[in-house]
Length: 173
Image (cartoon, rainbow, N blue to C red):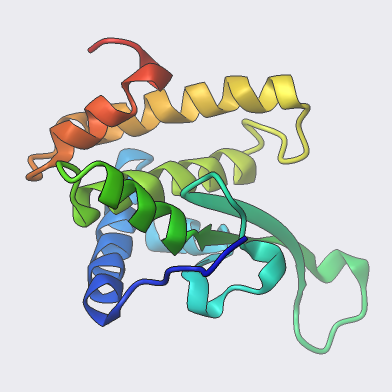
């Protein structure tokens, strides 16, 4: 991997705004209360907070599953699934450069909602995290369709360009 591009301060502010909106949209869609939402333990990190192992070429983000453990507990019953959404700044910035009609806010909103849908599906046992490659492709298509359904009614400038960008995953509207 060559020099890695990272979000600047203004772009990080956009990502922070996007994360809050994405969490609200997804929790409303799934009719999840705050306590239900927090039970799916996760965090969202951009490049500056990722380890080298969490940076990949290709996708705009990835979900990594870790095993968490409650403080001061050695029992395996205190373990829980912990997910990290690893935002790939360099991939997003490269795509924005190649596709100037796509803007950071609606693009990152789609990406983050997409990854949150994965986490909801994993935590509800609707999809197995360690799936086969064939199952992963089917899951990707399903999550892209769900993301489109979630965003379809949203009135956000530039969102149609993003939905068009992902059209190959969900077919014509």
